[in-house]
Amino acid sequence: MLDKTLVICAGLQSGGTTLVSYCFLQRGDTDGVLDADNDLLPALDPQLARPIAWYKTTICCFRLAEIAKHYRDAGWNVRPLLVLRDLRAVWASLTQKEYGRNGITAEDPPLRLRVRRFVDDWRSIVATSGAMLRYEDFVAAPAATLQRACNQLGLPWDAAMITWPKPAKQFAHRGNGNESFWASRGEGLMETLARYKPRSTPRLPAADLDWLEAEFRDFNQANGYPPHLADACESTSALAPPIAVPSFEVTRRYIWETSRKPFRWILAQLGRRNTKLIDRRSWKRAA
Image 1 (cartoon, rainbow, N blue to C red):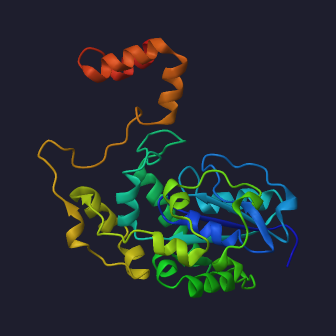
Image 2 (image 1 turned 120 degrees about the vertical axis):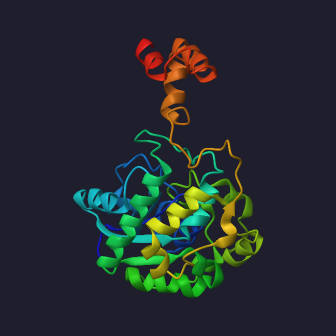
Image 3 (image 1 turned 180 degrees about the horizontal axis):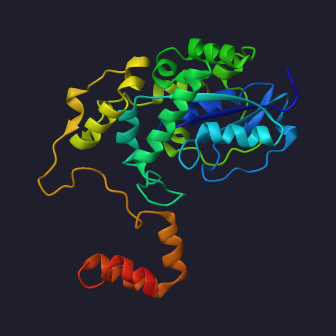
């Protein structure tokens, strides 16, 4: 095992990456970051490599390929791991989460852009025969799926990935992680998976469902996902927009700016109540 080996695990938000990350951080030869901020690329302490350093993030502001190149430039021996999940299930979950902001900023990019970045990473991983883990396989056969991922990464098997003897406080960085994971966490992986509620068929607006199935047909076909989920289309009212439209007002940058500039906040509220009164671009310039 080479010094400064860094495994970078990534997938979409709501893609099951935190649970996978917790399993790998249970290894006796591994330490690192349970769930990194996806809009930052921090310097990593070489002491994390014991002899393996672990860094889990989500594909949102950066692609996995970009993150891997960044840390290779810093001298790390990077081994990427991409976590796959049915894009329709991810989309249905993400649109219901607080962090699934369908924004227009670098910190909160449009949801469609995030999915495109993820699928671009998948195509790159396939072209280079890189390591992948399918979330649905992981839930159905956790030990076999983790062993296969270890083989792809060139890592020895460690049964601690299933039994979880290491408390989270021993991780170098245990921040973040989604609420459903912390609420469902048990004494080991099998107990934790038993607490997860069975997933129903995802429900998506027709336009978003059609886009996911047409745009990423190759992804679904290659990874064994159904080409079409007939029961996934939700009924929408005639007044509902045909697609989820990205906006500035849902972003963290909007919150930061309006909290620092109360006058801008007042103008923004007026503009949201009556778009004819104040053009959105005008209140931004005025503020």
